[in-house]
Length: 337
Image 1 (cartoon, rainbow, N blue to C red):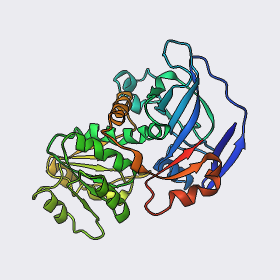
Image 2: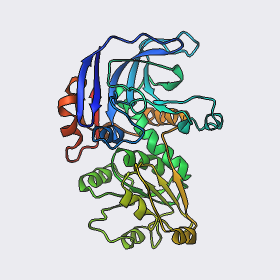
Image 3: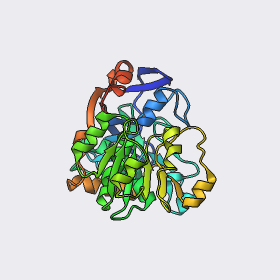
Image 4: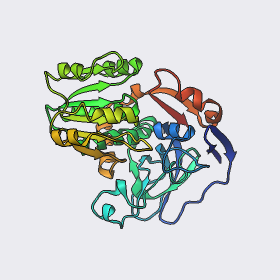
């Protein structure tokens, strides 16, 4: 079968390898769509933490069941599924507490172990979320939406709160519909005017800001009716943005880092205490989040169609990955297998 592997930073290789057998108790699936996200781009450029080479990337997956486990999971050949790519142990304290997303022994497909840039995979049935009414494109974007949705869950966003989403890439975009669904007043900030224009076209926002042209925090207070945000969701993974966010949260507010920076973040402790801020990390998503997102897409309340701005065939990845993922205005690239 065809497989594309990242051999080292900047170098993909297309290979033919033997087809895998279905493992005991698992489900054999055919990969149909792969979403490319920031983790994949960081890995390509050598900036992904928790990572080693060579590695088969791909964790945003829309798949078709080929062989079911026969273990009572009720999956059948032909079923369409979104993949929850977080393989957890099930026995450590966070797993026992229902926080499988931050399992002590967590392995993420395409990061810690080989992922979906290949034709076939054998996966545990519990990691397959069936949705036969959705397209493979839609299924491949469920995991991306899960990252933003979990960040909103971590922030415990409430109706009427002023929420600032920093970073209008796919992860920031994935947080917006869930903050809006909770009745928040949402403002988006980014340095890329094309991405801000994309956000404005989707509707529902209280405003957008560009820190290169807008004066902060005054512009934020103007949009907030004199107030600073009660919640900031930073999806940039940029240390300057993340550190600067401490000065933009209102007193008593919550700051959630959805984006990951592979280094140290510092802040002024007296100011942190004076404002009595709550700082939260957000990692991955939970199984219930996947199922909730599938319901929202199925009902038409979340529309992922405008997100896909570029497409690739799997065999094109070695030659076109860098150009496509770096193209101006690019929101989400999807690979067809």
